[in-house]
Image (tube, rainbow, N blue to C red):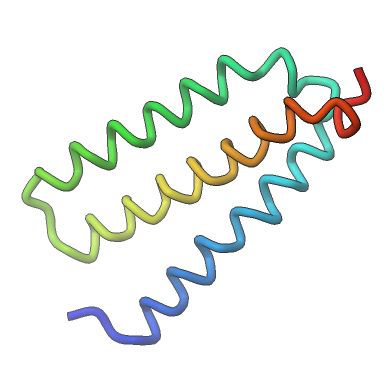
Length: 92
């Protein structure tokens, strides 16, 4: 069974996707508008793989690690995609 410490670490790492997504968006402001399709594809692939993983009979620790990793990718991509629509942020 998962320990409380493992769950806390997983949630803390997952929440770090928000500032990391913002940092990546800030560092690559010029490419955000052109990358909207890529962000959408990454987000869709992450969700589809998470759904598939929920139905595959893997060990729970492995499954949870993969789901949190994909949620991290989804969150960082969604922050970047949301920032790509902010005209002040992108400076179009």
